[in-house]
Image (cartoon, rainbow, N blue to C red; front, side, top):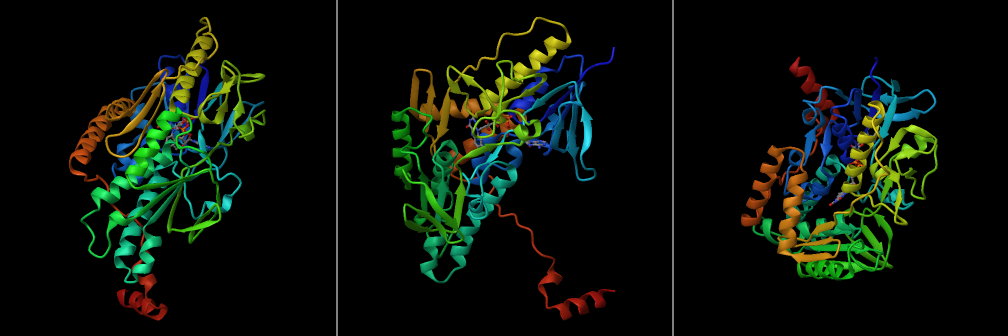
Length: 438
Ligand SMILES: Cc1cc2nc3c(=O)[nH]c(=O)nc-3n(C[C@H](O)[C@H](O)[C@H](O)COP(=O)(O)OP(=O)(O)OC[C@H]3O[C@@H](n4cnc5c(N)ncnc54)[C@H](O)[C@@H]3O)c2cc1C
């Protein structure tokens, strides 16, 4: 009998968990992603602040699944879904909108940045969602110190060495803490004309407290820790304006050449492709078995899906995506092997964690609330456990120990493209140079 084809779009936390759950299924699985790697997003801020290298938080999807014989990995961008004819459209560098047929479809395409209707902010305040974003942020941060060191006019140092982070959720808080440690320890004796420790780090949010998913006590502990590290925390006001000169918050201009967006996220295009009901943010409304109403063969999971449990929408976190991925894989396996279907999906909340600088984290799991070094150890152990391979676990562990003991970071590189040298010469000189070389 011909085996069914299961197409999974997205090899993030949800899609990869679904593919792994189907490893023993009598099916052909096609896993499509527009990047060739599975990315561990919770550690992106450590690439942006030069603690880790990109290859320490991302693994080629192909190598993760190299032993899974029923799964083919395809590098391509899905651009649409044809629900009635049951195929997705895939484009790559060579071919556009190639149809790939499915019997079952799992959409796990995650989320992107949301600028809350201010798309114009994007140019001046890049976000942190991909490896390329993290490298760009790292370049920008390290470059600011280089520019200030080269700048003879000390009045310009202030704006060059002011870093503004917009959004005081876990990403903004973790990034602010890591940046504060970078400037006060790692960089402290590397410059001659400037004092990196004088850098100003401002964390802005319209919410009344940092880390709003956490309890008020933990949120206060995180804020106190940030302030202790020298971070200015500005809460209760949204950002009115962001441009090349900095930001305006509650009417006050903060001059800065480095603004990073760590605020909202918006779901992928899955809702538009399917043309089905979405929530206000645009996430696809799914049923308790994670399928789209009226389409038992289409599953939508993770950050791009919207499902309520106990009267509240499930949060956009890795655990939700992974548990949904495993559930969708299991349900499809039962269907194709004619086994009894599992009960409705139920999310088991293992808790939240966030790191604030060196050796300090906050942790909330059920009734347990912890802050300090113990929480940081738990954070480190859990994050190591969820990295994709044992070689990454070892390399990240060693880097953390080294950074903890010495303050040194693994990847303080500014990696930029340079124009070819001839392009920098006046036109006639360049022409003569080319002629002479013939
Ligand atoms: C900076 C940052 C820090 C975070 N920290 C934490 C944390 O500490 N704890 C936590 O639980 N959660 C954290 N999260 C959230 C967590 O990473 C997400 O909830 C989780 O990744 C969602 O999984 P997903 O599978 O839905 O999407 P993702 O993991 O984002 O995967 C989506 C995949 O789909 C691919 N894709 C997207 N569109 C297409 C397309 N059109 N065609 C082909 N492929 C496509 C992408 O390349 C990607 O590989 C963080 C997120 C960020 C950005």
